Image (cartoon, rainbow, N blue to C red; front, side, top):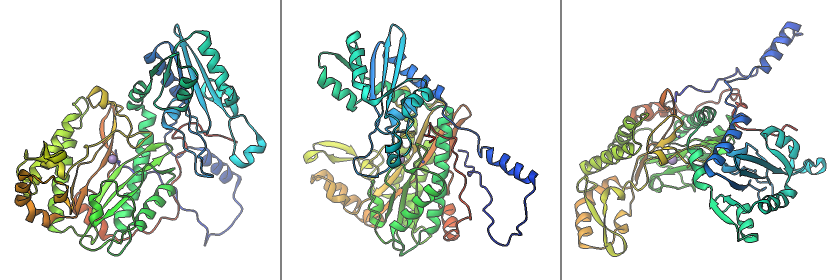
Length: 504
Ligand SMILES: [Mn+2]
């Protein structure tokens, strides 16, 4: 879920109390000049970058035909269209109903992009389409109408019965397999994921932007949290802040979980009234021109952490700090997870929620296996890649090493579920464990704490971008400020970030 600088702000519009006079020609020229000046350093993903991604993919796959379909118009009327991440990654095209074919033979690659035709009458309803010619010219591929897709594919296949590379359950691949089962098929999913795991500089710039927008929402949200406010009010403020800052949408279902809901990992009903004495977990992320952030803060509803909440929070925060220490270029990525787990286990043992850092309990059907007691309170991974998806492939999944081009989260947590004891299989060993921790569990139950930050890695090093209050005293100080007044003008949208847009 950097460098932490806020997006550049324009002064608000002046609508009142201004003396109206005729502007001078110089002033008009200056205004025109200012209007033409981009607001931020360009993070445009150039057509050449998309072309290079396609080249790298085919270089990895070798001779054969790669097929991929883009996302269709949503079946339900008038829902927003979002391109599928793989298709967007390879083309930058954000239009429904498109498809692509890359054909490689003896080193030569032919590239086709199929789109809807321009149709002014239909565009009254759908909005402008690029049309095959312009889509082809913009991407450097050969533009064809989508109606020709099957014909072109069949002729390429007939010319030299090749290997066909397909992605997951992509519709184009599934349809071809049904039509031509005699061909040789291979998966391109792994190769594509691996490519997507290494982010370019423009992608890192887009990620910084989406994280900064998410930071803004976190800051406003923690200031608005107080007793008797409903979770959905906070969700509304968060998602409003995303959109107001030019983000497309939340990159995943916003989580605002108070009290017992703080211990449910993917709680997203967000309809409970928050009470004094509880914590609220806010796990949120903006998707900004296609790039997803992921940032979690846990704050006390009353504005002040209780001693029990402080104890749990500090263990989680220490675990995150231990992982951050290992987050350096060239280091094995699994050191982050090992450091966090060791800190969590030591902390939970010290609190008396587990018997010892390495203690186990009987798990599996009928208690036939041994699992770490740590996993009863910390049951998810330490983090994941971020990019076009909130759970994006990350290069260290493959290389094992943190490097420039990485973008990931670090998000340890402890969740003390009220019904924890009911989850355990009934065995003598588990009875012993329950007896040992029952009183302590009672004291800490319904406290869930997750602290999640988003990082991008450039040649300069690992940047912590989600710089919003996270030490307990910082959180309490921010909450003391109370709900924020909105500034008069939203910051400008960084239109240079992200891929091609249809210009009508
Ligand atoms: Mn996450």
